[in-house]
Length: 95
Length: 345
Image 1 (tube, chains in turn purple, brown):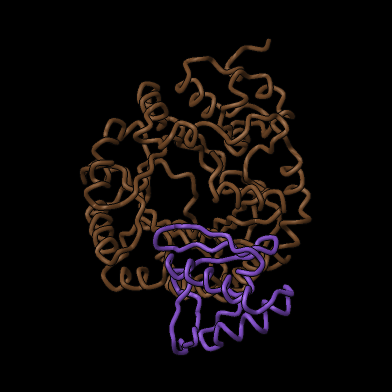
Image 2 (image 1 turned 180 degrees about the vertical axis):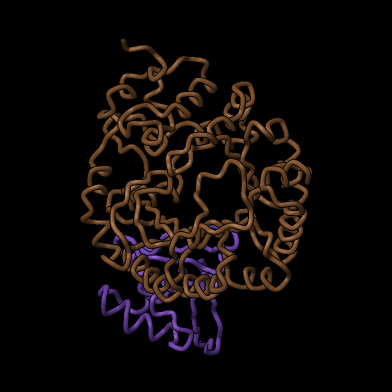
């Protein structure tokens, strides 16, 4: 299975409000709220850490969930945010 | 129905987070609009370094929606340095400008920075009257050219049409122009007195018949709910967003609950932003006020629907009294006389 690397898009505005991240795609003003787990993925999206490692190191440890479930959920979140231009996804590091 | 943005604003208010901030970078302007509420005299301005430090404090305080305005912000040679820093801190930036100083190079930079919206004032569909209002020949042409440059680069632009007694009757043509240019369109029919107390600009407010057409026409106002009616009718609701999830910062660092509420709460450079936001007695006083505390307005038949601006009420003489301009809007919308108009003697 290929690795996935994720990075925050430049075309976004974001702020944490009460533990959740409010993210806006500034091009079309679409607004999203990320729950705590999605926020943890968002904050770790540095373009060079594989998603698998983010899930293992951040999600599984902080939220006490098993890896398979957490990775499946994380992929869903990442796919959704990428579709809205919030995250960039690549099979190689994004620098 | 409540939208996600309503939900975010409401949560910010409940948590006491200043999620929306207007920061005027200068009061200097290269136009001299006849209805402007500002004194364009030589007010001091924070340096770019001080503004960037402030932006860091605002981000830390939870501010997300940042409106950069003036005066004309492009008169500052360091505007792009400030914009770049604001975007680095992931603010949602809205830039208010007359756009006359935006040529191809500036349009390129704005479009590349991820500015959410550029708001450009346009007073008329034709050059002559617009230029008469700005008192700068050629300003209409320059604003229009800039809008085209921005739009050709995919930049969101909102054309803001302020209606006065001078340009009344042109709003359909301006809206058509906005459509042709591919911009959004907003209309504002309230001319407020100058912040220094000079009330001469009040005479420029639109005639009643025109006001009725604007405040009752969903084609201009969006939905009547959005334009005229607050989210909740409850008298225990706050007066407005000012001091709850919104504030205004002047070019010299003065912090106010809102640009239209000239109650100085503190000054950046002397205090940290969060200390002013949380501890200023004036900020706390505004925050504690509820619609039910207003002796006249709480008894008014429009209490549930009036979009009363406390700043306009203050400029009319009493923070807790009626705002004459909003009484007129309520009357124009409903035909029912507001309590603020009734004699009490």
